[in-house]
Amino acid sequence: MAGPTHHKERTLTNIAILGSGRVGGVLAAKLADSGHQVTIGSRNAADISATWAGTPVAVADTATAAESATVIVNATPGDSSLERLSALRSALAGKILIDVSNATERGPDGMPGNLRYPNDSLAEHLQAALPDTAVVKTLNTMIFTVMADPRGLKIPPTAFLSGNDGAAKDTVTLLLADLGWPAEWIQDLGDVTTARGPEAVMLLVPALLRRHGMIPFSLTIAH
Ligand SMILES: NC(=O)c1ccc[n+]([C@@H]2O[C@H](COP(=O)([O-])OP(=O)(O)OC[C@H]3O[C@@H](n4cnc5c(N)ncnc54)[C@H](OP(=O)(O)O)[C@@H]3O)[C@@H](O)[C@H]2O)c1
Image 1 (tube, rainbow, N blue to C red):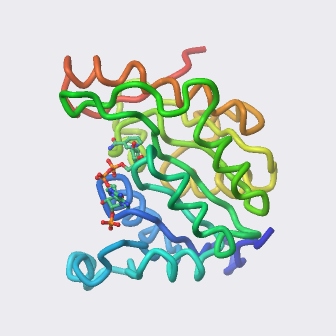
Image 2 (image 1 turned 90 degrees about the vertical axis):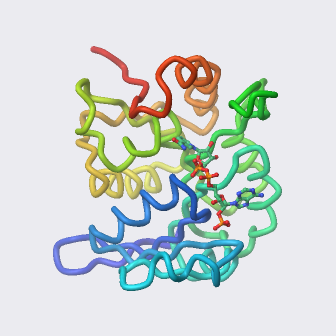
């Protein structure tokens, strides 16, 4: 497994964020602020370069970004992620893939609808398609602003981890710390099959969005 480089006392990582939308933007900005080398991988690198000009975040096409990084974040639509990431199999080999996406069919009102993988999970399909990559599911159970500002909620939120590779989950835990997550708010659920629970949380989301709009919220485990 390609590891992060150690820089002074801090561990700095070469990270590619695939997708320049709401999630990709928030994660890229905060991880770059923390000193990591961050490249957004986009279908339209030329178009979005101006948005990130003057910031520490680099922009490249999707394949170039994936090839250059040791940790890759999937922040693209979950219903088509399997095809997109399977095509990057060699670029992702020996690396960590952090999957924060949600795979739902879009409902007629534009809201997330039924689960794309109702009997298992996207994370499991990604792990099966990418056997040389350590897939870690996390952060999909909250609105994007919470991912990089967990202390902004009144009640501590939970970040779940699901994945087969313990060392990869340790690396993701360090990155979560840089996003503002204390260790006690992180729940390692176990292997990649445990992503079924967090992915199914999407069944709650349309009703919450209809009721509250896109306010910051997150699943949390009270204990
Ligand atoms: N929004 C949230 O609060 C939230 C919370 C938890 C999880 N998620 C999940 O995180 C992922 C990203 O969500 P988001 O809200 O950031 O979505 P978004 O604003 O729509 O951004 C998705 C990005 O994915 C890239 N992309 C690549 N292939 C695409 C395609 N075929 N169609 C559309 N976009 C494509 C695009 O970036 P380029 O044009 O640069 O390629 C696009 O900007 C989704 O899987 C979502 O379910 C979202």
